[in-house]
Image (cartoon, rainbow, N blue to C red):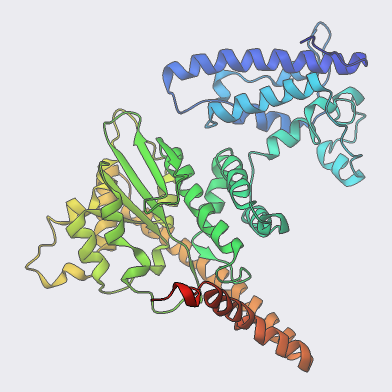
Length: 448
């Protein structure tokens, strides 16, 4: 296939810059892969591009590759960014360059001011409009793909497309692709929020199922951030949703993520599925259940005894957040099996004959985990207090949602109120289910 070159000279030069960038990053990947297979490129390069904007980098004399030469990555900028995401960005830009791409819409004055705060004239050839193969948003658009807020996540989950027949799997794949590519700071924001299902999401809706799937993906990404090779199970069978394996140590684990509504009351042991986690472990070494820390039973519960008996690790989103913020990452010297095996360590403190077997052991477990990871227990406690304050703030926003909803209901007309009640009770669905059952009954001549 013959390679197509853009007619514009400035466009040709930018395509050459992208090729040079891809070659340079490829060499850096090889160098960094020798040091660590999981700690690769290029947040430093991304930050340089974001700070300078797309067009305000001066074109130095003698710089035959143009303005982007000054922001090419070097090993000292290396940060956590998967090889998959780096190569995807570069190959996508190359393929779009060959196919021609689509020009981006004109940026607003506010956007131009944000990209170029100095107010100096920018080089036209560096914009997305004159470099369509960079995609709809150019290099900065590629950078933004490594960012995601909780609001962005909800926007994908609640989109109308997600409710279309057959669209569930494609939306799940989109969520996985996006979340697996985000930077650490965005991951921390998602972990801080993912444990609470928004009240704006209807019960038993497609959005609620997508939120549960997103929680599994965030868990897998968190394990990747901790240095494990983690994937999301595509099967819908009776099994754990996340599988992870250590790069440095010979063990693997299964994981399951839980998220609850703040309005959910009286959770029982079936909600946590500790027994199921023990069964799903199978040939793997460990089983890890991740729930919101403050949604675990406060005092005593059968789940604590079950976790000790079946060696199931009861972890929380808040603990994962603390590990990531503390820079914990498994290596040849640091084995995180001591965390996943915490229930086994607790058996030395709690025995079957003791009455406190079913008591909440998180305080003792946190102390043991900090001891094994050489972390400060006081710092961990301070982090949990910060998470508690964030939970209270989140609860206030959920209360505000229901307050506004109540005001809206009071303004309903009689007809709309009746229609909403019928819909809430799912009267039509129940009638349809009964009618379907009647149609499935055998014919008279088939009975006997």
